View 1: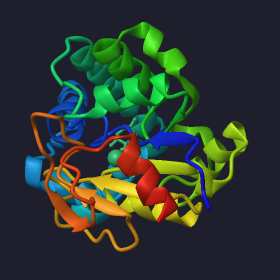
View 2: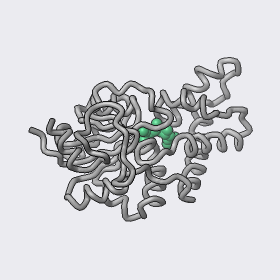
View 3: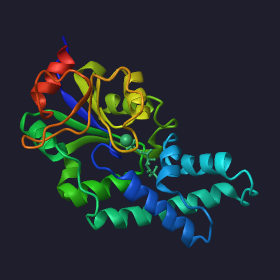
View 4: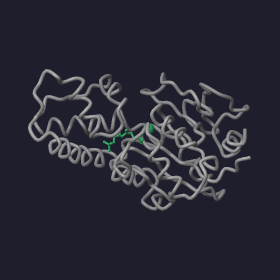
Length: 253
Ligand code: XBP
Ligand code: MG
């Protein structure tokens, strides 16, 4: 019987709804600054999110959507420069506090800390983006709440590969079944499940219709006592917001 010891959080789309009005805008600012005619609409970005990692996403865009135009010379240097500029724009946007945490995230983090549960982050995004989001929403000291912040290029293969979650388990020195992952996307679910970690999903505008086969529970958000969640898949046993009792019940089931 598993005994819950740690919560492992994804970042983008899970802690905060950062993709449409955060990363996407930052990419477009970097493209415009570089004089490129690349512009990712809300709809196109939703398709591009099939690929995790900003650098990988730019390559995917060129391969799939810009076959008409010759590839820029020294493509890898251009992508690296664009990604650096995009990260600068993104961290500045996040530092302005324009994107809040999603419902229930701060409450669950505080409950977990009070109960002595260990916390970790497993994300595809760049470490600077995690620092910016945690600092702007929870304060700089919140970075110390997470024993492991596994992010970005730390591992060779990004989600849906299990690498980032396997790295996190190794550094927590915990078994997969003693943990619970919180994710927002099918790529994230595949990654966590491939590492053997039970997973709860909180969907967002981009991921609502994705396949979450294998998730313990799929919700519209984590909820608050005065803001009940909607269960989209699985059983919440009558709970109306996600708390540690529900987490333990799910892991033990
Ligand atoms: C989401 C991603 C990231 C972000 C962009 O990460 O796939 O690539 O979209 O950030 P997760 P970067 O859901 O795992 O938190 O440009 O820094 O990659
Ligand atoms: Mg995510």
